[in-house]
Length: 616
Image 1 (cartoon, helix red, strand yellow):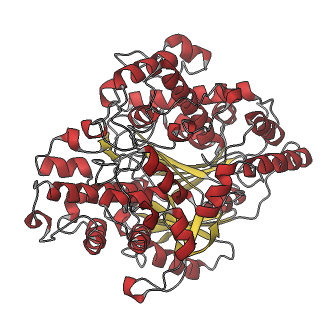
Image 2 (tube, helix red, strand yellow):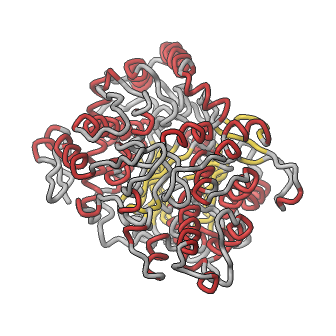
Image 3 (spheres, one colour):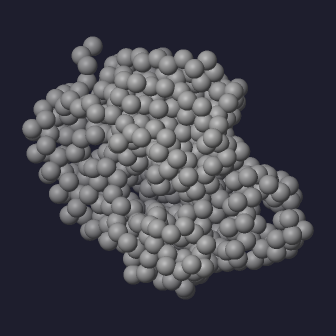
């Protein structure tokens, strides 16, 4: 089989149980069928992981995989995915980041890194082009991510070296621990806990190899065309100017912004914690991922010494964090949200899950379900941010009440005899902050997402319902609160497109207005015919592969539901409307040709997509 351009042609395999390091050829058949990223990773993991695999045991396998266009000028493709069995959901864990270590790993000559087994003692991995070593991390264990990154860079003295590591949350196997890479995160699914279970503290990498493209000059011209078109999109311009927090003001109008643990949509003080206010007060500059012209990242600086943070500039909060530590907690103090974000990054904790579980405690306390005696004497109230900081520390250390909170919201509910229907989770994963009562397609996204239970990236219908549509992919902008077959079909087609994007790997914000232009970029880069129909085909195949993988891991249609708290009518922007999940899910299943009883894709579909050999 002819080798595809864009790829480096090697996978680095490291077994931490016996310290074996291997460099194996990229599987060209898998690359041709699934591209790179999540598609390739899941195809590789499919025969190696099953429902009996312990997510935090040595048999779970982590696969860090890049995309074929990473390292080129292709717009918004500077990302890397991490796949493993999730300790949160028990199914596919898939998380990706825009960190610059992605580029260094690929330039070192590796399309991906597979981590097997588990070390008996803490270790870290050094990748310096062809030289790969496993080293003792005893002096780093117990340190959080900022200090770990600083000390590892001093220790290894790699000029271009970039670091990804876990903090104390990952070491202590907090279920929703993240992998942090210089203030960019593998943020969901508990990948930090999986890394911690393997006693892998960090990876530092640098590389100097060049990436070969099929038609580099034509690729360069086409890339410029696509970049220009992306920056002509008004929402991308706003995202660059104000960050993802620009959506705070919009979502309070539509009812999408959750308030006081999903029980309200009334938050008149939203301006105080908006992206515009962040830009006017604490913003130092934009932050761009590699090959991204948008620059939605924020670099901030707090001048007040009262915040008890290190001096200097650091990563500012994104929308989900602003909503989680803001409106979800009825908090209007922006600088406290910035501090919570900093602490989560340092400890290595997912901001969505941690804010979700702490907001749940506030809700339970408010409704008289728990008292301070249940919380180590902490008299927790809405917007009580000093105690939020304390709880984040307890979670990362698994100390006191933190031992319970580290397991997630559903474990908290069981402990305090709370109706699970009043917990904002799907398959134990705290839902993101795009209320499905505002955008009915998000009910499908949260219930049927192929990774991390509820996902807002696997099917961002909240944006499509606001006008982000792709006519050439037959993805229509359906009215946000429409219970219809059209909504289900639009959601299915968008989920397929995002599955394609998870493998190429394309950021959900870098949406080329013309997918035909982006398809041409793939053709010029990889050296294979590629068009809109290929995008549809790959998306369908990769989404279906993920479906098969989750079914193998024990997923059933009974798992695909929303809790009642997310379906109760609210006043305000949602106007008391709720999604008809029975209708929407049924029509989605029909479109995807999934059996309503088993969730299994139709045999004819599997044959058409070349997936008949992936057996459960």
